[in-house]
Image (cartoon, rainbow over all chains, first blue to last red; front, top):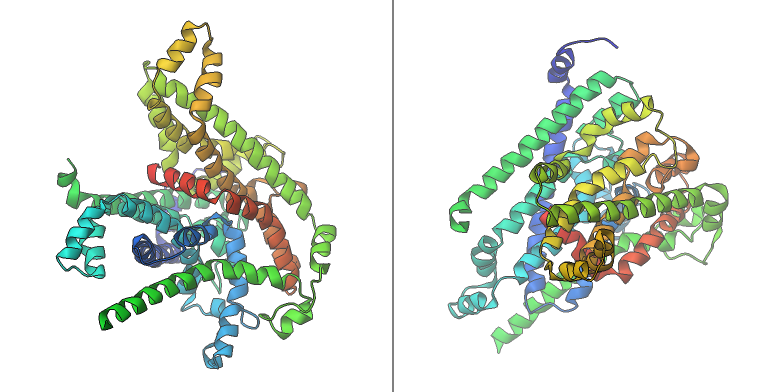
Length: 250
Length: 278
């Protein structure tokens, strides 16, 4: 082993695979924040309304995917996206839309979006339960007043519910960012970074650099970079979300 | 009248959306379940049709031709031991931190809590090098070390904040009646802290059972592999035989699935409590 000073960091700045992987992490995070927390918010609003039946069954079933291991989720969606036998293409063929059937995991242009779907699927229920817990703690008399004033369901959800549960939503967003910066298992199983390195994420790049190329020093430098980048993103989002109502809380 | 009918339609529509959503949450598993009874050619003919007969061939082959049972036992051993150690150590640490004011208490507490901020993937390389150099890889206890270490911070935090809310009177009464330190905490405080200990055990059970990264890098001996890593080995072996792969997946999922659907209420509450407070 030889002391190389900051050399590894110089390489890192020029390593296009690493920055591409970082970009993928950010993209996956964006899809997941919108997909997981957005959909979870809508379903939570429905589930806490008086219209929905079988609430507790929905909750138990929706939460179930988040207890499965990421490896199993990766496998399951690998089957679902399979070109010949997958559920997606079977459904498309049954609807006589065979033209739309694709080898979903083989297209480098759409792979990040496609690979985000299993992640969104797995954790909607998780965020749904967090958001529902926050929503049920809101005083129902607020809604009664709003209803008398003629506010519609959508208006109530956006103008009353959302501001009242900002805190838990902020927590959910931070959990989501932190979780997606370290995404590894799903991608390792589903695409292993491919095709090419189009679905490479940071943790997988470190793993491959360490255990396939045996570049331990450079992989360590990347680990530090991941640490700094994810702390910066989580911290940054925290500041961004927390600031507006800091005054109200005190 | 028209207004009421419109109301009914929206109501039905929302119910339908949620039913569809819930259905998509479990359908993939149902699909894998019934497909695991198919032969390979049956699956290739139609991947969505129900199996012609309940053929146990895939399951028999999974149990006889792979090490799946060994993987399950390894995962079980890791999980049970890690959870037990985490619960006991974090109970003791959480108790002392909640009940005693001593010099350095805040520093020790913050030191534990800081552990939660570290993304584990930043530690994969240094941990691998350290384990390798100290000859700690490929032992039955190898994975217990990171699992306990990374399980402690959130567990200590949850237990500390729970014990702070339990009144001291019971412990004082026990001490007056001649109960010693360990007698007091294990006979009096332990049962009182039951709910939070159950929460900690649940969170850690799923975290350890599903853990992949450390299991992948720190253990390379097949007889020590855990379920998630073992499954990825199947992928290489049965790339084309999907039904058999599906049978393997289901076998490994089964214990956790049963546990989840039996204790779902408790598990959901526990895991969400951990996430929100963490």
